[in-house]
Image (cartoon, rainbow, N blue to C red; front, side):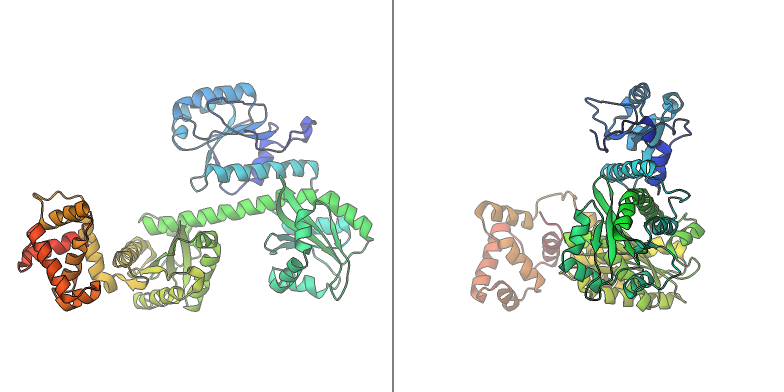
Length: 534
């Protein structure tokens, strides 16, 4: 399946595999051996169809779902076809070592953290960016030097330049000896265009016009708004950001032509920066997970990636948000919120997301007691924030531990507390000691589930009767036992007249033979009705 820009006629215009992988840096792919074929021109991205493979020279092949037994044959076919690289993952990698040297092509494994869809999108954009870099290189500007790129563009265009992402964050700006207008100065100082300014441009349709156009858009100065030239940065028709030019020192037509010519070279730089940022996030995520789930972590490496103190007390929170799609889509915003709340409470935090569950590792406490107080304060503050969904989240607060190396124990107790909240049908924040009864009952429930009783019980007979006759007598018995045998309280809870309830209790005893005056009979019935749901 072809997933790339069309191949160019000029063989020399195609980027090499080295160039593509440089753009797509950040840990997305891991080379599985040394290769001499990285200078081969890359033409397209090919998602392998194992039933009907169609390999072509210059392909980067994504071997999605390739069985391990088919690896040797596929690599041989890839070498014969002149493929540039093959990407594999999972069981296919286990069949690779003995055939690696024989293949003669570059083979990479996909990152554990990224799906095949993630890899396909990233490589498609990287290939498009690499094509543009080959066609329009920035002399003397390295891929990771965005400020140098802004200076180069400013010199070519004849104005002051800022490079922004799709959220109007200022990624880079050109240096200038001249006085800059207030709009540009404020954006540079904040590293982001003020939100009120973004909203105003969105309301007038100006931002939409910029993102929809492949050409440079000119906004003349009017009503106190300074003059700007703007162009969207694209790779494979996907908008990555924009270039803004202010303080023009040449006429508009000349600057427009220069910006139109230079704009394509920026895509590779933005893709490289995004890939590097994603790589840092992957490293941090891996380190946090290692800290929370393993006792063999190299703490110095973890501190480098997560900005945590390693020699002091720590505490873990386990936060389960309502299963809203909005929460999953706004995980970065919720992570930022957790950092703000933690900073307000005087500690540092490292977040780890898994689906709609967030684990927060809190550090920078003077003592275990202060960690206990700080963790509880953060949990209570988060429980009250509307950003976490329509329903109040469940937040399990773990036991504070004296060192970061013992964080797995805190994480385990936090998860037990949040699970106990779920079992009890509650929300909000709780420590394990606060939900001890629910946690104990949940543990008993876990142990008893699937257990075969030696004989059928009165509750079994009652459930069978309910199923056959469409009655709900088991619920009546459960509420009666929950209300400690009080007829008045049970009748009120179920909405029955007390005499009606007495009649139903009599029917229950007739049907299943339970002796409600027997302590063991009541205990067994309550365990079956409360814990062992059919």
